[in-house]
Amino acid sequence: MTAATSISLLHTLIVLLHTTTTNVSAITSTSCFAVKRVGGAGNGFGIPKSKSGTPSTPTKVKNKKRKSGILLEELKQGPPLPPSPSSSSASNEAPKLDRFGLPIITEEDVFPPLSHDIPRVPVQHGTTFDRDTMAKSMEKHLGINLDIFDDQGYSLHTEATTTTTTDNDQLHSTRWKLQLLHHDPPVVTIDNFFTPQECQDYISMAIDPTQQEQYYDASKILQVSSPTFSSSSVSRRTSTTWFCAYNAVPTLLAKATHLLRNVTLGQCEEAQIVRYRTGEEFSWHYDETPPRECGNGGQRLATLLVYLNDLGEGRGGGTVFRDLLPPGMVDAIKMEQQQQQQRQQLTVRPAAGKALLFFPAYNNGAPDVRTLHKGEVALDTKMIAQLWIHEREYKASVPRGNCQEDALERVEEERVRLGFV
Image 1 (tube, rainbow, N blue to C red):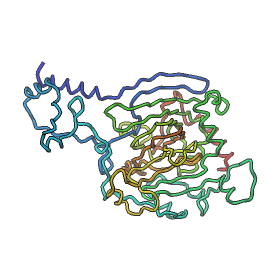
Image 2: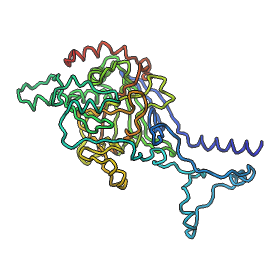
Image 3: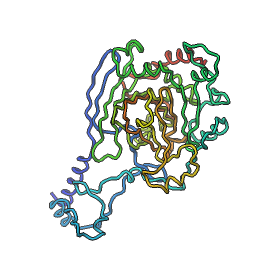
Image 4: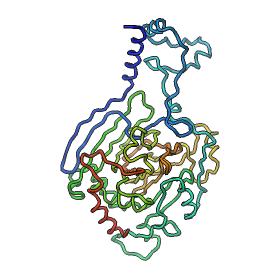
């Protein structure tokens, strides 16, 4: 075996040692089955970016070309010893190496800071709903069906409640309330998107198997536990996800296709219900689909996330956008001038029934690098329902046999019940 061949085999071994492993097992019940996964990030998690918004690879340390025989001898001797306290300042500035002698990938390697030239436009604090402003912010993205809202941002439909009142404030509590939190890229919340009963139904469907058949006959849910990533991964997710059959979530699908402009059921990815228990999180990541998987439905154009329970102030669990400023901060460059720990970042607090809508990619399918976000560490249990919308028709892969057509009848029934038609 030649020296060059030995080096190639050794490099391959090192790469394999860095690879995340996945262990999958299936469990079936009356209306759900489960898959447990250890490691791996899934679609769109932590995709490296360049400053232009295109996927890139982590920065590597350039080494001078050496003769293969000398390099082989060095590899046999193992990684260099750590510098002594008396080493020169040049040695102290050398990149940190892992146990294989490779440079450690940092968060900034994977998620480089955005250039000042990349536009980010927050909204003014206290800005009232303005239809023209909202429409302008959506020009390059999938967009919202603004015709279903009045001039104050309340939905035209009112969901049925057990309490009858003529008080306007009480009436508005049963209607959606649209609010623009960031202008470019657009980030939107919709209060009262789910009723309290709908929130409870979706929580029960996921975590209480005895209740699933009561709500959704013949529905299936795929459960995935993601306790950690590999040691070489920058993004980290600790949560449990239930991938839902389309006919299990007709309310979410009916409301999503009513809210979003020109979206069909066929563009919807499998809905998810996600639970974060105390101490769990989802660190910085993008929601875009990796290029190798865009053959199925194209890119993800929209993320719709519905909080199913409340988390009070100081209890964590918020959705944080690293590069976006909260309302009232009009100078995005201020963020770049501050230290990381002092930055003010747009954060959406979990409130039962509230929906968060943002756009991982533009209408043309190009990923929007500005939508890097994370789920803060939760100090109490946090549960969400989540749905992604693709450019084109999407074919579901989980649970087995899942198909949008199976939900058409139930979704139409929900549209009638909700007063959408």
